[in-house]
Image (cartoon, rainbow, N blue to C red):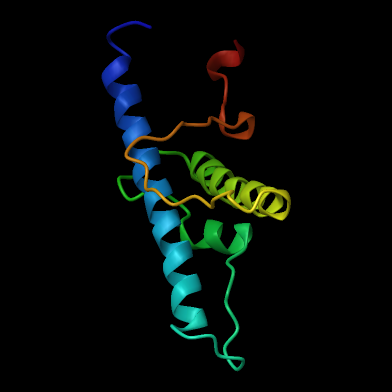
Length: 119
């Protein structure tokens, strides 16, 4: 990888990590606050869906990522939640995502990429 691109890619990865951490924190805080501290049959826990979280975070706080890349970060978090939920059925020691990420992978969706000049 050329050394010219590395600082920019690190910056994008840090922006993606900050967005992942925001999604992570918002999801768990919403779930925790909706259910209450004690098991109460009158209060039902609110699990945010992928579409709801994508509407909450249409772009990253720094404004560096494309909206489709932000959607990919949200989809990755929801996919990890679904995977943990599926694994939990067979393996009781499986854990849900529980740590914030300082850096996270940057996904460039094909619908967000344009070719300039037809090349």
